[in-house]
Length: 123
Image (cartoon, rainbow, N blue to C red):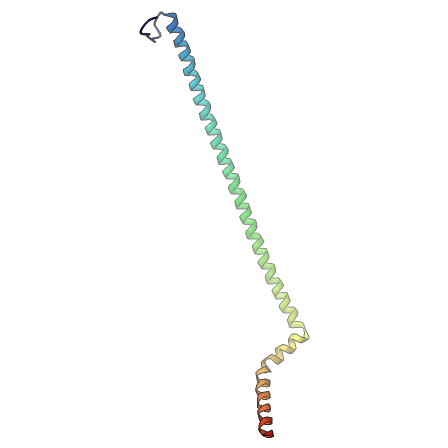
């Protein structure tokens, strides 16, 4: 066994040439692995961007549908309120209440005066 081994490619020893070939093979494999890792990272990055884009589109569509639903709901609510008001205005009872309600304070004051006069008369 030799104490020192020179790894120069021009060396004549067959063991060293064999070691050099194995090292060259390993270096080539490491380069291939690095290249494959970079390709996988770029593919994963592309897939992540695509997934993010699809998720953003889905959220945007969902938000627009919610706004559309809210708009239709409020529009429908206003229509129902308007129709109910029109129906109430058409009933006999609502017309009666509309005419009598302003006179209620007058009736109350008149009734109170009447009770006061009766109380004075019977005293």
